[in-house]
Length: 426
Image (tube, rainbow, N blue to C red; front, side):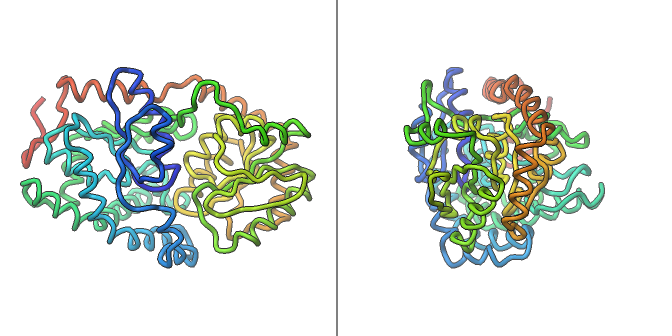
């Protein structure tokens, strides 16, 4: 079960495909617009309401751009989605009926945990970003750097408390509907933490090591790569463009939206030409565009096929696109837009894969051109990117999830919290 943008769904096509190959029956439960992508992975699909792209294009969605920082954007996003949570909760409950196990993205975990308890089935988290408090870094979703150990933990507790408030009403309704005793969200979260409720994180420990102060049950598995059909190829127009000259630079902001797509597109094209580079521009949800023989505009093209042919990738530093660039072994220039993007952008620069990050609000043609020259001409960035890609390709992020699924459904260990009681005794 997951909700959000394309990046919140695509990794589960690979995870679901891998679990299916291991003999499990898997259904991905998410927004209707992602149904074709899920079904193409050979995984069953169940649609839930809300079109995330339409919500971002709404008046409330456009107000996100006026927030001064990621913390402000997060507050506005939570206010925007709160009225939608009740409808989503009922759809998730319908989808869960008949299931033996629920795997929950962090965006829907509070709802899924109540549903699992009410249906008497085990559940586990399959998160794409770290949400648990730690002294090592501030909560990624607010885009801040480290404030120091105690402050980092306190900030994460505060963020999780804010998330609980968004789901409180829907969870209260679900608990009554399922015959469960009333429980405050904070109490529910504490109870699950004490029970070492399992959460598997779909990123690599080579990119972000597991924090030493995390409780038991929180694990880092390696990436879950979006499924690609065997023998898949790039579209003919893309192959022709790539073969017609030197390796270009990819520019795309994925599912992020921007207030002035035309001005941003012009800035990007000026930067590429100033750096003497060809460009592959992905329209994405921002509606980027370009013209000229040295620029190719594309829609959705699998990053796993496209990125290895690039000289560098300029992206919004979402978790999924960051992972795809690392897997391709090419340098990056992150342009963080919102939420956890600044966190992953800092990881790229710390790892030496990117020369610097340029937040969207400070992006200029000169700054981007300078960063592109560094990314494409300084050997250390390419060297670091290739070395990290070798490590990522050796990982199997699906296997730890498969082991957890089989453990939780076999009864080998306490797989669930009983209705209204405490955890099973060992």
